[in-house]
Length: 285
Ligand code: CAA
Image (cartoon, rainbow, N blue to C red):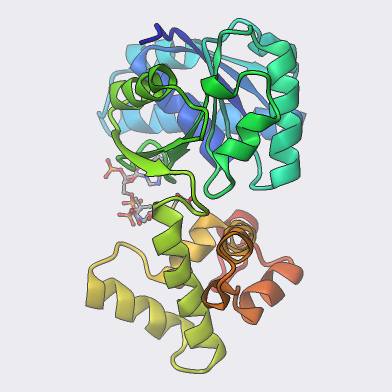
């Protein structure tokens, strides 16, 4: 198994900043890269706020928070990832964008480093194939909010070696997560099951079966979920939910995965959920 000391993160959005925080708190050196200064600054400051909140709640002490934050180096220059032992990509759920990022990572990161994607549905085999090191590429799918959720879904591409997969499993476990193994099929295990449930909730709304509040309350209280499916869709991001449904629909070729027209319409209208204050529910920005 590889010895991982320095972890690079691509993308300082809601997933990337969470992974960076947990990795730093585990003791890894972290290089947090984002191509956009606003996102990088926002993500970096968000981690500081989360670490400070944890001190107020006595989850950890001020000294640990400070040293964890000190282990994170934020950068706008991708070549600063060159000495990382493992780079976890957590950019927007867009296939072409991920291909472009992995092509660039393959050029800038040392040749024997592992590369992982936090993709929620895109094929790891295809992502790996754009690099010259497919055996060193795997999926490492964290759940949102990363510091709270206990799962990492590991996805093995066709060429991923045992050493690569066992190393990312060990990293996830060191971060305090449970690692489950899934094969490289559209949506893997989590979103193959979760997204059709969310999409069906949108259909129930679209067809007038029940109102937003009642759908969420029914599933929250009736099936003991922490959030109703429409609230959860807002939390994940409606654009991300739509992107995942499209991957399931195209990849599995079954009409049962067609995204609900109402979900498409909300995304077209710019209702992305919690991240911009408006989805099935409205939020203070
Ligand atoms: N970062 C860090 N910690 C956070 C947080 C965040 N963004 N949001 C909440 N928390 C922490 C709070 O600090 C709090 O911690 P303490 O109990 O130690 O004080 C704890 O989580 C509970 O938070 P709240 O009391 O504010 O709120 P809550 O009880 O309603 O819980 C929740 C919030 C944890 C998000 C809960 O509603 C939940 O578990 N929701 C479901 C989340 C889920 O299903 N995530 C997976 C989505 S699917 C995915 O991510 C993968 C994909 O590919 C789409």
